[in-house]
Image (cartoon, rainbow, N blue to C red; front, side, top):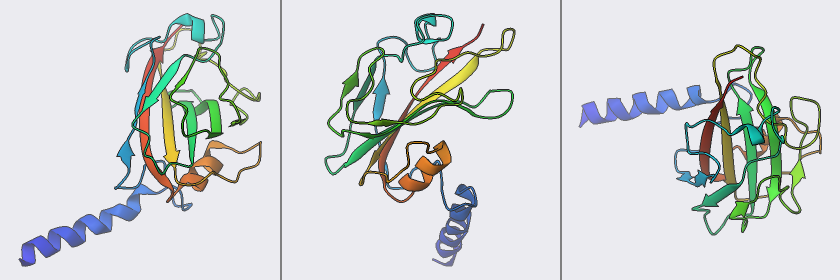
Length: 181
């Protein structure tokens, strides 16, 4: 009995280490459900076709999301490159997506949603565009189901979005693609 108590206390002591110190966490709460995020353009961990990059049409890939909890008030989407030379680079930041949205076609802006400014300094989608000669970068697209609509300014950053979602994330899902030049 005492051993079980010690293990439980040790596990609880680790939980605060999951935040970035600013009160936000990119990780969902331990009770968050999993969304399934897929694309007919590429499978998880596969290469992103050039059509969806700076070397092609530079349009967002088609996406499908399943497993959205019924109490979801809003979806949010974040596409980032953690392999960028100067640190994580944001390619797409969207919030206030209707929770009934189950798919987006290629190049589609979610109707009624707010698109934030990406790392290129533009609003909307900016496709993968790693430096030539780099090993393929990983592009992590995360969809969040939240129990409320985030109250954010149009120039919100990924940190702002994650802070607004902290404690309000019901489910998350990711789709990771790779791209190199």
